Picture (tube, rainbow, N blue to C red):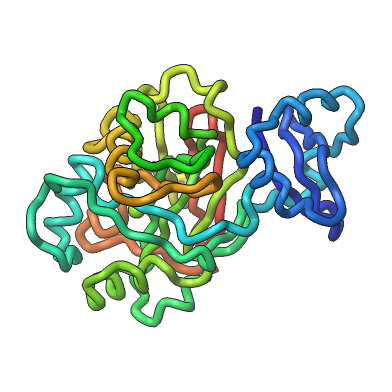
Length: 289
Ligand code: MG
């Protein structure tokens, strides 16, 4: 199932994407929280049950929003989690941590929930005074229930589904402030969407392809199997001492091919369009202004 939240001529609606149509399951008050509610209850069956009778809208006639329009808290993110990207970041001179090329333990940070935008919303590069805006195509994991001390073998029990995330970053701010909170947390720097795909629809996670294009030029192309720390390891690590909650989002890291991997760096500028495609998860498009 593909869960989405849309704006239909000013009315927020939640439901499913089927083919080229949006199937409305919840509208009116609370619709903006309905996808989160399904994640928390796990009750996808009640939406499935009304599939034949629910109102349908052509996708071209609605605006797709971030599937969880109000995150419960900042996104959990993983840094330097693909081998070739870890090396390109280390070599770029923008890695203020500069401890090791390939991390020996997962690098965890958070990305401000207030940075969230949906598909086709604009990334506002003018907010970055340093003009060093970079893209990071990533696989996002949606947590299904409270998770503490999760053993690797049990990881799937705590995953609801997957979504595409662009971990947009100001490289100069990331470097200048050492910690990444400011450089990753700029308003509009958190595109997510177009929908959450439930885990049952994913047959072969490691083989899924992640691809990022800027103005139709392929910049990133990798498989999820290339992750240094895989999703079971990330969930085990994050819950060994802390707690993940239903509706939490983990951005698992970006592959090689970000703007600072080029000489000179290829930073995003007004007029660019970033498209991230992930096998089975659709396509996340955002213009830059
Ligand atoms: Mg990232």
